[in-house]
Image (cartoon, rainbow, N blue to C red):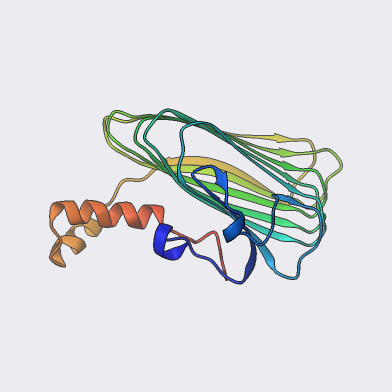
Length: 226
């Protein structure tokens, strides 16, 4: 996965999708329903190119299980991408890093639901929006009633061509007091010091653009200690 998609992996149970299709030969698990506790992390990997309607459901139904999601996809045709995460395992954590490259029209609907106490659910999404594209990114974190000590965060950031149109809708529906809950959206603009540093290192204009794009997309800060 590293050579083909620049995806960071480690010693984990895996569920792999390429171009929206489950890949049993690359997976150690056959479902994104996590119904038992594993001695290793679970890493769900969703990569390649998408078009049309695509959906990914993740249900964490066991206690004390870390689950990680890496999405790295592009669309050259109109696409709708839905991710639904339900964390119903006490003391379980979910951390998702979604990287999107939009060359057409792309719409997302991401939902994270806490339905047990002491759960973590974090979903960070980055989008690279090319010329004359439309990107509509919607996400909501849901904290059910009678859940305690939850930690939730959903955010979006974009590096966009000036001709691209972007709409962000991060939201929360909170029915119990969490430990921490956040949601945000931002646009990334490379600073003059970054550009001057790369120019001083001998990079041409196109090389600087490509380096900044790669740096923006391939930030694995969400996977601390992984």
